[in-house]
Length: 277
Image 1: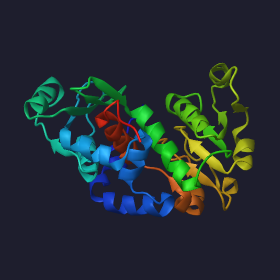
Image 2 (image 1 turned 90 degrees about the horizontal axis):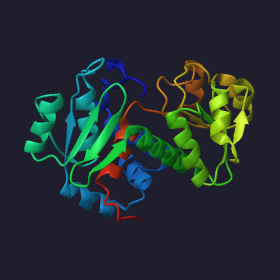
Image 3 (image 1 turned 60 degrees about the horizontal axis):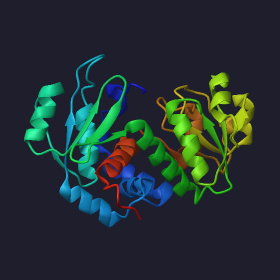
Image 4 (image 1 turned 30 degrees about the vertical axis):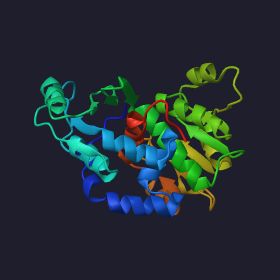
């Protein structure tokens, strides 16, 4: 899991309205609707589930420790989506105990290795990687007006997030190709699958116009790779576009440090397993 920095998330709590407006322009849907659609539920089911649950974000101090604004940023996203929240004062085990004592039914917590949401009554764990892949594929599908038959290049396709995206894009009917610096792993993963393997990223970037960038590499997408029809979903941190490329594609680019992943986690973790659209 990519480790965020304070700079990545400092302004999330004060910019959610503007972020919603940006998503509306690009996809036709705000953050909440993207999350709902990624979980395969209706708006009513989501609102009913929110009414039954209380969420808490538990600071975790092990490993490299807490990022100062992380818990507050996650909590701001949850509240923006309409979730009821409680705020434990403690961290780690004390924080978990306090959250439950205050009535929390859902706990969000992250360490160096995993970021998860746990539905305590349902004994369900939702991993941020899975939720982020679902959320970004949904946002890309909405931005493209559908992905069936579309050629999509997944950059970092052998990574945990990238491989999840490959599988989800296939379910949307996309014609998926993947690039990864670890060509051996990518070849093993795609064995027997109708997934293209790209060996030269520079050449691939010139041939595709829809990118799912799950790579942690920066400055790999340059102005010469941007076409008028280019669409990019980029959950990877840092953003893979150069400053010049970003200027050309910013109105057709989905990228954020936490918002879509957390929103998709919430929709998935509160969903009753028996409910669907």
